Image 1 (cartoon, rainbow, N blue to C red):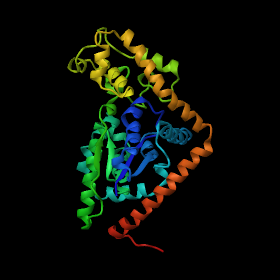
Image 2: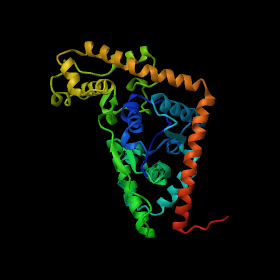
Image 3: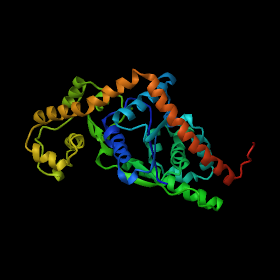
Image 4: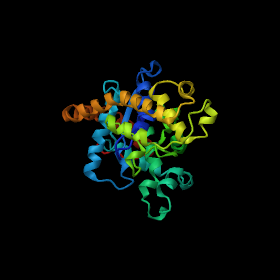
Length: 338
């Protein structure tokens, strides 16, 4: 059976990069006839979040906010399961089992630890180092067949595939399938509004670097107006555009919001200055994002409805996870008590 799994960390407000690069693509997969019979599992990965310090009260609220954003963006709880990762203990249990067969050399090659730990590697927690093993457990726990990923997550999916193979070989079974990537395309690389060489991030210090899904119309317009650009008009060709990272980023955002291509955007705006392009982009962004923020507010104002979505999603995936964990425990050799 086909199963799709993906998730987002509840570390801050979701931004337009999360929407265009991930969640909107989940919605497309949800409604894609190719995956009509697939189980869709969309997680709020709060276990991953605590690899860095989090305020407990804020973390709980962020989980709810991100679940609300999933629904507001178009994830249908009748077609997909939405749940907090920490509510299903099997994620942690399988992570330990996989960690016991993960060579240190595999983890030493992971680039995300190097980027997040930076110059403070000796002070970084074990959770940050073993983060990719937990991500592999998230995927393999449900015998996931397809994982929507951005270019920067391909390495983690490759580790999940390697660990699936390592587990199968270690225990002489054909238990875990090798999950296939669904590469999400341009939207997976929406960049920082103040630095077109850096990916847009929920954790960046300045809120002006991103457009949050909860931003109002005036804030969206301000952030786009203040976005870093250069003094030249928009070029005619993609080749010329790609040499100008900030310009390329804004054109990419426009193209994705308008469901068109960068080439089409340039056909309309080449030769125009940013003083003309930015207001058009702001108007488009407000048009596309306002319904999402309004739906999020509606869900947040009706906590019982959101609770029901999370409880039902948790119960469904917990049953799937426990069934698989019983099989995994038996394969590994654990003793069943009752």
